[in-house]
Length: 314
Image (cartoon, rainbow, N blue to C red):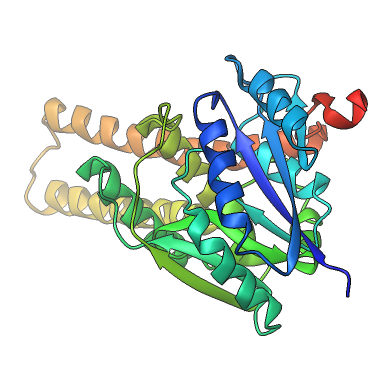
């Protein structure tokens, strides 16, 4: 019986130190993956260090290593999409190069898929050891908010580290939107999913590419991509403000006619104007986010541009 192929997809940006260690870890666990052959597909996301050179050295050493190198940095979402698109395996697993996604889970993930009971095996961290407390608090609130305002199934602590069948991969690739939020897409496509939990581990080498600001922007992208709740909230806020303003007008008229109390007090008026103006600008900003995403989608720009691949070198 012919063995099935497992594609290990690794988006990498400035991971020259991590990749050799990651490769060694995969080779060590490979002997426990008895029922499949493997291919290691590394997506170089326009790295500025020697990541591409390291990948080429791995390719010389092991023909099962393949790579796609972008013409510039397009971001991890583009790397994930490219990895899924260029993978050839019957099963595909997404992993980070920094070994924060434990390779030791691969045999168990494969076992669940081979059983036929599940089409996807996903992972989540049960703790956030090593992360700043403020960042962890915002992350937990984000996951809770997303599950309330969207129809995407996003579990707290969920990682991009998951193994899926080819059918799931094709479903994800069919969602060809330019503004991608993979955690939401993985949950939105459905299919029966098994969750595996593990404790958080530190990076094996290098530095994280995710600052608090980048994570905040990523969270905004996720909300805009999978929920229209902010637009509904803006509409309700506008209605509430109109009702409050109408009540204030009635109060002022009654005070003037009944009590002869003239309307005065410019400081309070200035505060009210600033408050209402701030609310208006915030609402315009929310609407602008949706318009901006729509604008980018209508351009139909490619999600990534390939600089070179190992297939061109063969």
